[in-house]
Length: 149
Image 1 (spheres, one colour):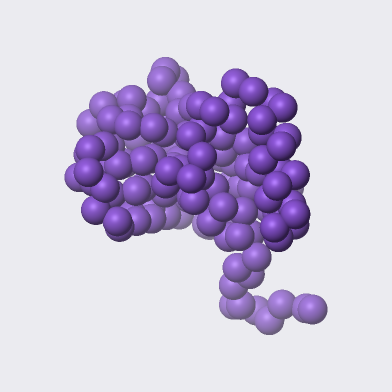
Image 2: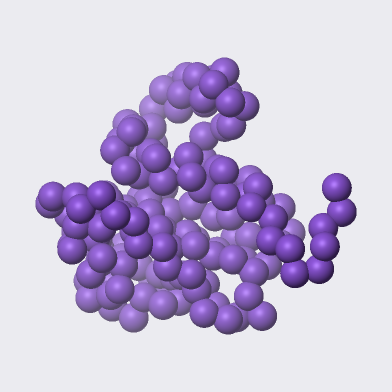
């Protein structure tokens, strides 16, 4: 189906939603990262439920550009890994998913990068930043890379 100018394609959000479900406590990222067989079994299970595959979950970088020392579980993935086209703008930019530190408030903070940027470029200090502040306040945090010009 052809897209109309100005129309937003929400299909790429399905894999991100699945990623968020994992980041919010459905499956611990550490359980999948170290055991490819477990990850494969989970992918088969998910595929049977709705045809979706697992998004790889890599711990957040702790040094270099985009480094984040989160107060709780933090994982990164790219839009390409989540099912978006690999040739799109920001397709290889890291997206961040953080679990809340302490008691969860049951709320989601979604951060969208500024024009011409990506979520990792908005981290000035690995321990004092917007993402950590949200997670420290009991929020689930999802920082998304998207096409921005």
